[in-house]
Image (cartoon, rainbow, N blue to C red; front, side, top):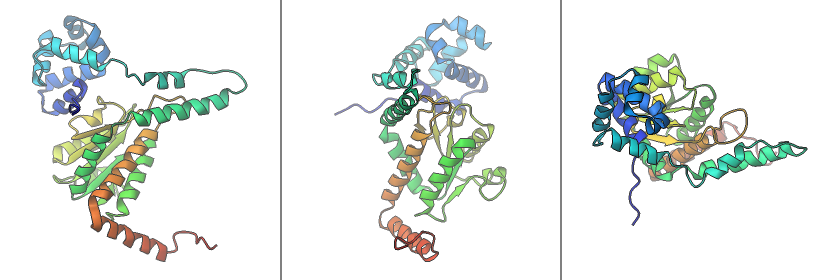
Length: 290
């Protein structure tokens, strides 16, 4: 039997951050943002750059379950070992020249997107979908380009949960919805680097309200992922092109909707059928008969 997946040290740090003392939160965010330096520089050097007491790094390590800084640094080093699948993204990022460079770029991008999807683990998505299934209300937010992913997920979930799903700020100012978050509800925040202040505010409001927070992000160190109950990672920067990729985020969103629908059983199927009948009666779609 395969051993259960172990949280990465950055995941453990992210989950623990909101409950740590303020000074340790600052040190923790520094480590999350500088994990390469944390694996290569001495604790004293790190402390000097962070403007912190070296002992704070030891206290941070112990606060998240490690025996000391050396053990945490070893875990960070192990976590940074490259995946065997790395050549996909490395090849996709390489520049090509010549008369067929445009075709090569398309091929490289498709290859990279496909490889990125294969690296998205299924188990965390299934666990997040179970949380959505039992949630009394589901709130979804994504800003700028991530708004499209939020709208897609909102649309798919509302097909079978029409009265229980809502875009944050969809019917008015965002801050009115932030005050409506409650325990027993779920809040989904979608984003990638550079992160918007608005997405972080939504995540913090969900955490304070005791709602289940689900972050769809490009990194466990994403600020909207701090304290999240579920973090679903996609690769925004692993493929060529001038703009980060949303392919993984869209795949995660559609998977969440599919699994949540499946968990809903007969009741979800009946609501979906009712929605389809209503849309057909409203002549939403062009008739196949022309």
